[in-house]
Image (cartoon, rainbow, N blue to C red; front, top):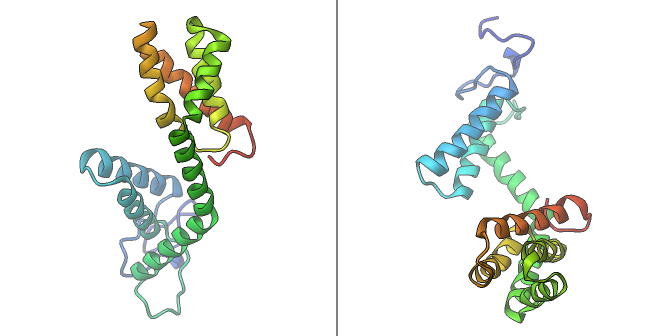
Length: 193
């Protein structure tokens, strides 16, 4: 075998000419993609969206994904096309859900609903159990919106509670995270993954 491919690697017949195709296991390609994302975001300070898009293209180039052998397009151009197509397909599937969750979150913020729910939990549980109130609020508010939206809704309330109660701010933030995380893992119709 000229390219040194083994049974655990991509067969040499699937290697694409003209592209820096690594003949390696999918695990190595995955690690390269993850390292690229981390270095691009943390080290090079590239916006997360761009880093993820570049990583998708890099993984496509390195993975040996099946491309149209009869195409006149260079394999790297085919990978770009596949990346754009799959991004569009993903956005079409979840775009409406993301948009509606953002609208609901904005309405909850502007109307004061998130604040009212948290205050109701505080009255029910008392200031001594403020972390439980934030946990319950995070759980309830995460049903119609995404985790990050709930986090941004409740963090200002956690800061205010920190000032009023003098208790540990980190506990309040963790309570919000646990409540919102529980909803996204245990309640089926939530918009988050």
